[in-house]
Image (cartoon, rainbow, N blue to C red):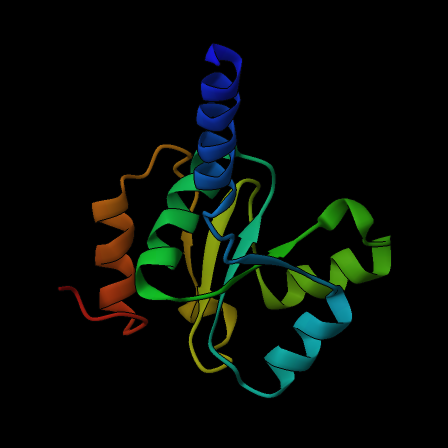
Length: 132
């Protein structure tokens, strides 16, 4: 009987952890270029940082937004050079492009330990969200 309770608790815990959605989708260079050419606003995530990615995902979930993760390790040299002409990024970082804006209007967050409140303030300033 105890074993059934333990299994039930583990199952419920697994389901609760698994229910958190991930609003950060991988994007290819070609798809990114298409969005940039179409002057789309977008949130981009570069690099590997569990802390920064978790903070970003929590805020995205709260406001039902999507960000795109650019996996630069999968790009060839020509794609990286072309990408850097559009987005001057560091890794890890969160970049915001407003209606296809040029890199001079691009905002980067490279602080790996940004708070959710600060990220929300940036998203609010850039008109991605309205603070509650």
